[in-house]
Image (cartoon, rainbow, N blue to C red; front, side, top):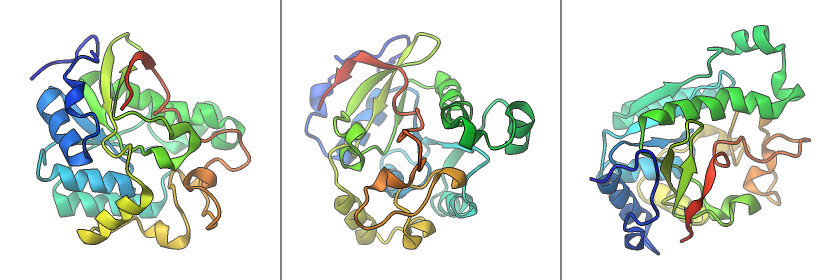
Amino acid sequence: MTSTRDFASPDLHLADVAGAGPHHVLTWACSTIDRLAIATSFQSSGLVLLHMLRDIRPDLPVLFLDTGFHFAETLSFKDRIAEMWDLKVVEIRGRHGSAAAQDDLFGPRLYERDPDRCCFINKVQPLQEALDEYDGWISGLRRDQSPLRASTPLVEAQMLPRGDEILKIHPLATWSKNQVDAYLEEHDIPVHPLLEQGFASIGCHPCTRPVTASEGDRAGRWEGAAKTECGIHTFGRTQNEAEQ
C-alpha cells in the first residue's frame, strides 16, 4: 500500500478510477490508501457507501461529527445503522465539548449570529484535527446536489492546517439522486426518517428546514444566509486535483 503522508500525489494510478463506478473507486481507495476513513452524517449517499464498504472494508472507521445540534432522529438513526451493520463509529466533537459549553464560550445562538464560525468550531476544525490520523477520507458528495458541487472530482487532494495533504475520495460524484434512491430500494436499506417529512439535506436542527418539490436538495440549509456549505468540503483544496 502507498502512504500519502505529507503530500497527496495525483500520480497514484488515478487512471485506474477514471470513469469507474463507486464500488470500484471504493475498492481502489481501500487498497491504495494506508489510513483511510469515511465521514458521514448517515444520509442517503453515505448509506450507499457504507453498504458497499461492507463487502470491501467493513472495519473502516466511520467519522461522525457530533455537533451537539443534530436532530434527535439523526442520532437515533445513526445508532440504529451502526448496530445493524456493526460499524466502527468515531464520534468527533469540537474543542468546547458541548452545545452548553459553546453558549458559555461564544454566547447563545451562535448559529444565528455567526453561522460560519459555528460550523467551523463544530465541524471544520474538529474534522481537520481528526484527519491528522488518516491519509485519506471518503465522502458522499455528488455533483447533482448543488451548483457548488457540480465539478466534484472522484479524487482530489486536500490540505490540512499542519501543511500535509491527504486524498479525498468522492465515489458517488457522478451518481444522481435517482441512482442513490434506486440503490437503497434495491438493497432494502432504511433511510433517514426525516426524509419522509420533506427534508432533503439534513444538518443541524437550527439551520435545516424541509424543502418543496421545486427546490434543490440544499435549499433547506441556512435559510436567510448567503451560505450553502458548512466548510468541511471546501477547506484546503489544492492544485493537485484529479478532475474525473
